[in-house]
Image (tube, rainbow, N blue to C red):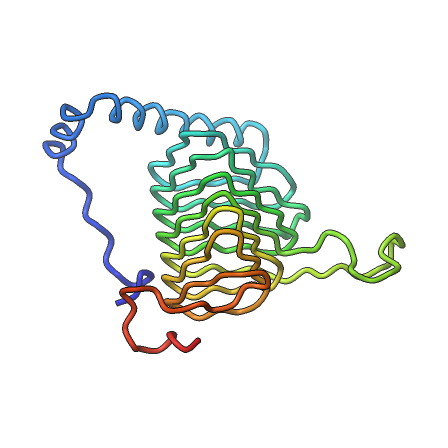
Length: 215
């Protein structure tokens, strides 16, 4: 069963939550403040007219900066340890972050579409679906073409620190992007991705021999 199809973990009972809070009151207080900050961010960006939506239990432990004319949508139970910057640059652009995603100091630059699958961990990294400038020699001219290709990250993917996710990247479910990897193509599920340019370095330790493990 893949991360995208596995059943959601049932919510803890009130008794279980109370027991946890009593066992570690400082952690419980921090989580409560993060939840209040999540509600505050939703209200703030609604009043500012931002095209920002978030599901239940948004927790913001750090900072969340939403800028641009596009749409930013967060699923349920997203935790932001930021500062995270989901910035869009065109009215048609959209950033979609699935349920149960943990977002660290991630910088997004979106001109069309960036999708992060449910259950993923996004560390301190850069994710962009555009080069922002043309790679041609005439890049200073206004009509020089600029590459814009959507980015799709699968479910339960871990993107490590200082990774770069460039336009056109697609990463399969459960894969791990190593420290400093620079991704610019399609990668299968259940693999470890490393290097610059990033390549498949191996399979994740608990991956079986099923489809998606070809390197």
